Amino acid sequence: MADKEFDLIVIGGGPGGYAAAIRAAQLELKVLLIDDRQDDNGKPAPGGTCLNVGCVPSKALLDSSKHFHHIQHDYTAHGINVEKVSMDVGKMIERKRKIVKQLNGGLMQLFKANKIEFANGRGKLFSDRQVEVRPHDGENYIAVGKHVMLAAGSEAFSIPNVEIDGKIIVDNIGALEFDAVPERLAVIGAGVIGLEMGSVWRRLGSEVVLLEAMDDLLPVVDPDISKAAAREFKKQGLDIRLGAKVSSAEVSEDKVKVTWSDKNGEQSETFDRLLVAVGRKAASEGLLADDSGVELTDRGQVKVDEDCRTTAENVWAIGDLVRGPMLAHKASEEGIAVVEALATGHGHINLDTIPWVIYTDPEIAWVGKTEKQLKEDGIEFRAGSFPFAATGRGLAMGEAAGHVKILADAEDDRILGVQIIGPTASELIAECVVAMEFAGSSEDLARIVHAHPTLSEAVHEAALAVDKRAIHKTN
Ligand code: FAD
Ligand code: NAD
Image 1 (cartoon, protein in one colour):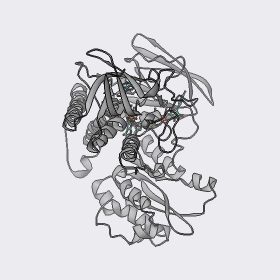
Image 2 (cartoon, rainbow, N blue to C red; image 1 turned 30 degrees about the vertical axis):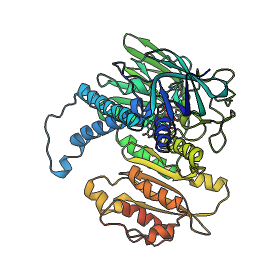
Image 3 (cartoon, helix red, strand yellow; image 1 turned 90 degrees about the vertical axis):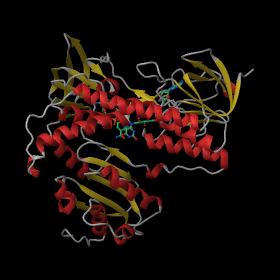
Image 4 (cartoon, rainbow, N blue to C red; image 1 turned 30 degrees about the horizontal axis):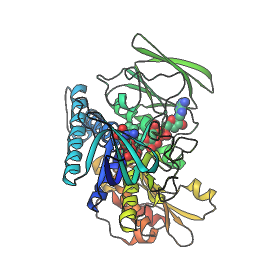
């Protein structure tokens, strides 16, 4: 017999779960949201990986470290002489914590304002949508939902013989909390986290070595973009070693000896800190009772169809827990789409137009297909690209590295993919996503007036370049 009944029970209060809970409440569903995260003072810390140990805190540190780097390296070119610059790491970390806390508090207020019942504790799904709720503070109880949404997110992968101790060997959580700049930092994995967090500590003065198992850097984008990225990272002093497979890491006397093999055989070097950033796995452990009826894939993700329906009736799963990119905006939009479909009969998310952003300097952003994917799919395309170095705004800002590249269908000119490496790529990609969502062509972007001087002119010119009629470069 249930202690409590709800229209929707959401397990996991990350960007997927909390956005779904808020939208459900707006649609007048009675909602229970369960999230287990707490801050250092034992207060609820909703917002999931993204807010607490992911997107938001990493961007706070990226911004702080970017200021520090700019002051030291870029201001003199503007005629600004700054003497005696120093970094207070403690203050930078405190600023990041404050931002996170402010947003945790904001979410708690939103839950209250939307009359969402919030339980700070663990949730576990049993048969017939019964959820056992184990609050950190209070008695356990059973709640039953007409619908249940699983939004438990993900956690960092580990690798054999490399034990995360949270101090010398860390994952994303520890890398956001160093109390001083490590003299030498090794990072296993030159993926998104490795490049972002490696950039933070490099800008603050660490000697950063990234050990990447693959032979290519960022194979998710086309080689012209990854080559431009590799060039810029090298200039910044990021030491990226490709084809390096780590076999062990041993801690002794506050140092860590990392051993890997590459084309030259086995190598070992000693570092002050080691960040393990080799991908993330669905956090499905402890979420499901044996009788829940929810099946997992062999990778531990919850099995869902294209509408996020699991194998149990009226149980849905979204975000990092299921297939598709592990991104906060994908999780949020997926949760909202499910809730809207439940309440109104209409809800949809287009997984083909989800933008990706890597917040390095320069930023890297992309949407849709790469050249490699189009060739594999046998789709004929035309490509147009344009460098930021040919824009007045990029030069005026002193941030002219990188380019925009647009891929359009050779027959009907529909935009199939866009990749950008350059300043504010994270913002510029939005225009391209909108164009793709409206089935826009490169001609559409080319005919739209873009303000001058702006960085968005590089998008405009890349669209013109698809038809070999860019104005500020030879075609
Ligand atoms: P999560 O955010 O993981 O939230 C799930 C929540 O559920 C967690 O709070 C978890 O503790 C809780 N939970 C799990 N099981 C239970 C249970 N049984 N009972 C109660 N609670 C439970 N993505 C971007 O789009 N942009 C970025 O810039 C970006 N930066 C990132 C930087 C880092 C360092 C990391 C690690 C990730 C980053 N991501 C970024 C990825 C992003 O954080 C995830 O894609 C996103 O958080 C997924 O949202 P979610 O709601 O599915 O899960
Ligand atoms: P990732 O998949 O981006 O990169 C992991 C890298 O580690 C890969 O290049 C892989 O080849 C390498 N690797 C795996 N095993 C290895 C080994 N034994 N030795 C050396 N290299 C090895 O994963 P991540 O960087 O951990 O990030 C996880 C996910 O979090 C991302 O895929 C992304 O979905 C999300 N994220 C997003 C953002 C963003 O949107 N800006 C930022 C951070 C994280």
